[in-house]
Image (cartoon, rainbow, N blue to C red; front, side):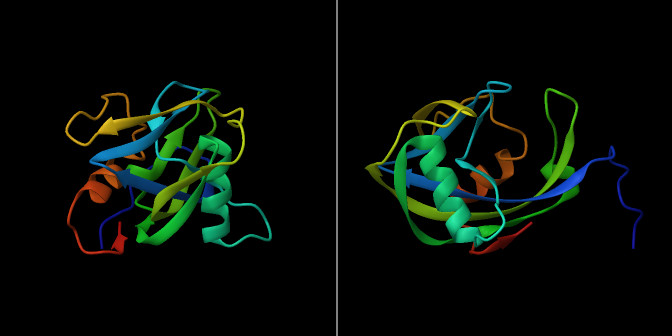
Amino acid sequence: MSEPEQLPQGRVQATAGVAVIEHRRILLVKRADDGTLCLPGGRLEIGESVEEGAMREFAEETGHSVEVTGLLGVYSRPSEQTHRYPDGAVAQFVAVVFEGRCGEVTRTLAGDTVETSWFALDALPSNLMACDAPIIRDALSSRPRPVIA
């Protein structure tokens, strides 16, 4: 077994999100802290399941409800799922990501998201959040589900 990659000190954070692909487009949200685009999702709260957390985060970040249709995968590779926030804090995510369908408008956007946009599958933006890039690739692929990465 090889030596683990040396990473900055930080915390491990359980997260959940939803990849929604409809009409050959994917729904992404723009982060308020650094302006990158990512899948709707975020930290789990005590007392909720990963599915409940994914649905709550989706509603907060997009203003829409979501129907979860399946499990895309579980993502935890430190080399892909470690993020340094603009304030210097470091987190390694253990992300459970679902696939789903966008529902009704339910609320206004939360403070950590400044906008939502649909992107054509063949015209993805270059400013994707690094941790979400491999997840988005998997969501667009025909790779068997669930992905464990």
